[in-house]
Length: 402
Ligand code: SAJ
Image (cartoon, rainbow, N blue to C red; front, top):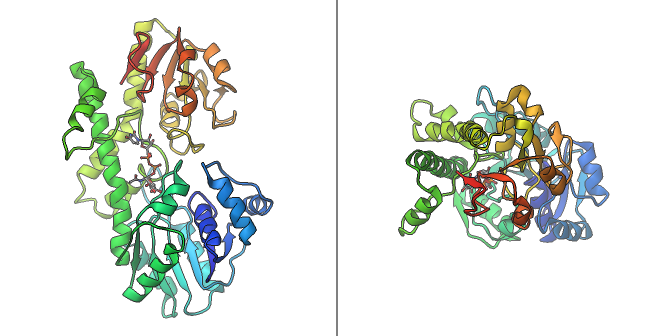
């Protein structure tokens, strides 16, 4: 089995490196943060994910090691972030180019570099190939598709895409991932692989935007959007997703901008969907003010937001709808009480430590995330006014839905 140096021990790089180690590869995980490397070497996981601890323990026993430096290997897998700048919507590929540069410093000719990081279509041709120049180094793109909360299952079972320059390299990469992945692995060009990843996440963004737009239409029409979507989805070729308080995380609200950036004259649906989903926290806030008026609640200090993460049962708060909404409140955000069982105190000014403490301090609860914890404790909401943006509570008299 080959020696693999996985670059970036984050949400994608760590689970992927563990899978390869458990499949018998000789794996070194590299991360620039010494704290991450120290923790992983000392047997401590760096984030929570169902089932990952056991996979990690097995990989440690199989001999995976972690380092802050790049290592000599036959294969390099790059899983560093490709964030975008919120104001300009420009993708920042500096982590990716820095990682490729460092790989090129240590690797021998005939090595293979696999980029897993999501990139804007054309990135590899425009920025990575010129770095490799005339060296005999192969490049491939194998974007990941796993979803936080189900990473272990999805790494093992999802289908994948491999983009490469020749059928031989594509087959080599396919064989490599087949060492742990039982899903179909489709071979294509690098440019198609780049675009397919971005197209998949954009499809989901557009579908959620449509659900959010339907929520606004149903509110104006005084209809139940969930009933509407349930009925529409009984059609054999309709599958509308669920409306909510907005779209967070580091993928779905980000990747569509890659298309907007590359094809500004062509995109229409993509940018409209971004506008709708980015505007959803403001719509929720407008609804909240209205509910406060009806309930006679004068100050946001009597309002509590349940959930700070971008979705249920994960500890990831990046770009979460709750944080987006709080940023719209400016000074008033200091008044609002928040609580999330996955997020230690310190993220927002008035953050409760427990569900009971949270509920004691508020009159109106806004459910922003449908964590299992609140689903298991719905009885505790008795006596509170509830604005349920995730449709978890049911049609009680004290509950207002979208
Ligand atoms: N959301 C809704 N309504 C829905 C579904 C989701 O409002 O019906 C919201 C969520 O609450 C969340 C956001 O959208 O705030 C995104 O959540 P998600 O669960 O849809 O997606 P991510 O960001 O966790 O993971 C996505 C996945 N992509 C697709 O499903 C096409 C995953 O497969 C990718 O690997 C991941 O992006 C990525 O890394 O690109």
